[in-house]
Length: 218
Image (tube, rainbow, N blue to C red; front, side):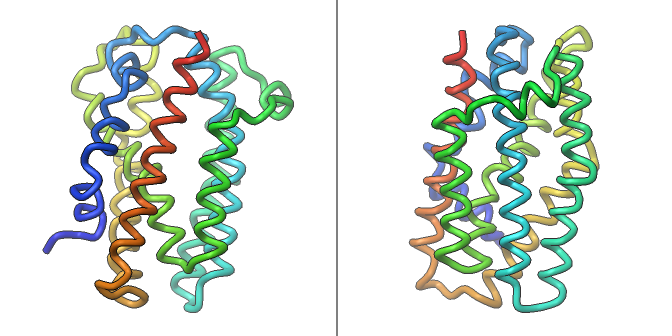
C-alpha cells in the first residue's frame, strides 16, 4: 500500500528533488559548504525550532482524541526538552551562543516558512498541519540517510549528517509517515487530496528557500 507521504512526494517530485538535492545539501555532503553559510542556517534554524514547537502545541489544540494529543505533546516535549538543548550545544561548537541566536532577526525565509505552517494548522485541521510539517520532518531523515553514505569522517558537517541519519531520527520520520496515514483515514477522503498536495508542494518550496537563504549568506 502506498503511503500518503509517498503519494505526495511523487506528485510534487520536481520540488522535492530540488529540495533534497539542493546545492546547500550537496555542500554538506562533501564538506565544501562555506562556514558562514552553515552558521547562518544554524542561527535561523534555532528560530525555526521555536515556531516548530508552537506548531506542535497547535496540533494538540487541534486534536480531538487522546492519542493525537499525546502524539502532539510528545513532539512538543521532544523539541523543548531535548532537541533545543542539542541544537544549542551543537551551535556552540560553531561559535554561536544561545544569547546570540535569540537576538538574531528572523530572515524573511524563516518567517515565510514558519508562518505558513502555523497558518495551515490554524485555518485547517490536524491533517493539514501534519502535511505542512512533513517535508521538514521526513525530508531531513531522507537527506540524512542519503548523505550518510557519502560523508567522510573528516567532513566538518558529519555530526549534522549523523544526527539526521540516526536510528532515533529515522524512527521520528517513520512515525510521522504513520501519523499522516492515520489522519488521512480518519479525517480525509479523496476530495481532500488536491489541497493537501498543494500544501505539501508549498511547504517543500519553502524548504528550498530555506536552504537558499543559507547559501546567500556568502
